[in-house]
Image 1 (cartoon, one colour):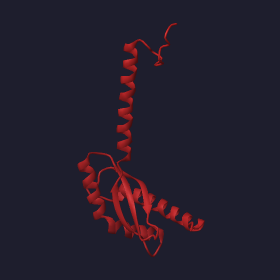
Image 2: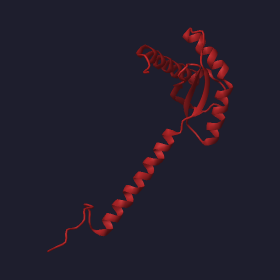
Image 3: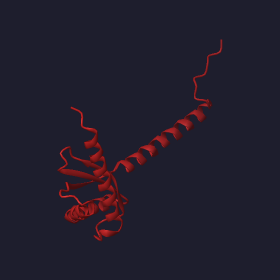
Image 4: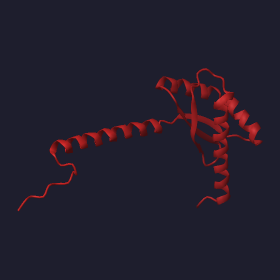
Length: 139
């Protein structure tokens, strides 16, 4: 059975609010030295609304990613309390954090594709066929 539009709209608003509030906390309220510069990329809310997973993208090395994840997990209680107070709701889902590496993976894939294009252009230049098309045999 498809989900009702009002329920989906509510879930989208909750996800958006979570992302905004956690981003605001990351920008200035959380003073844990383990937390490196990062931002929220996505919030996934469980169908029942009892839990959510917040994906964060960290600017830095894998060691900084791990320390940021540890710092965020340690601050879960504070974050939930602040969200409850700011949203004015009775229940706030249980929050877990995960590192989002999609931006780094995308950058790496772009780099590899660029290398392939450069090699292909170099090979075509060597062969003397700048268009890349197969030469037609002469009759």
